[in-house]
Length: 363
Image (cartoon, rainbow, N blue to C red; front, side, top):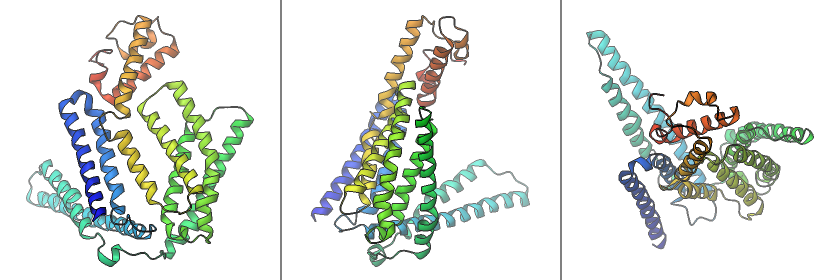
């Protein structure tokens, strides 16, 4: 009964937070658009992440959650396949009928079919396939043999190939005393995403502490990845120093800190579970994005103040043509490139309205 109250309280808190986000966007539409978009994604992702664990909070391990997630994933694929076959069939029927009886079809019919199939039908089929009763509460440590062998003997060696290449690159930049390229963050993030994915896929093996997969995923791989995170830290720091603060870089920094927490937790936690990975990710999404004052909202006035300061210091007359910055005598080539990049970044992230005070509307 107490657990039910807790879950109901969490559900009400999530719904209340999302309501606040909607209210802010409605009252302050010009300030809320970027925050609202990223906030929507954060709330939806957080709710989806929390779904598989609501019924299993009192379990001593995550085996039931693992089987439930696997069943949900299979249900999503099956329902998706049926939905897209149905969509293709209805589209073909519509075009075939139009061709036979010589009449033109309205694009709205295509939209109606897509909404009916991709939204309504897919959702209903997925809900119908959600495991119930015994299938939902399966706590067996066994897993499909094909999944075990393919991850153990194909995907984990591939992950090690990535790690070896990144170590070789790290040694190379140390020898030549260079800073890492921006690509390093993408590759290390891919390594961490693969590691987390394989850890979850092989979780039943992780519970068997004597298996080599358990030692690989809870000891050897985190130890091997931690130095790569230091390399990624250097790359992220360089991006901040070279180009300043932006919302994507703040999200990258948050992701890096989350990666550190995962690797360290894997090494020090006595009970190996995976629910905390999802719960911490959901919490981070809500803390950084699930409200109007997220990273995009925080960075907007900072970026605008930086652009205003540059324009004021250089005596640039506004509004100006964005493509004419290179011809401005008060700006060096590097300063013109920086200002062009900052204004372009503001336009892409926040829309034309936020840069209209600096550049002409017809540009």
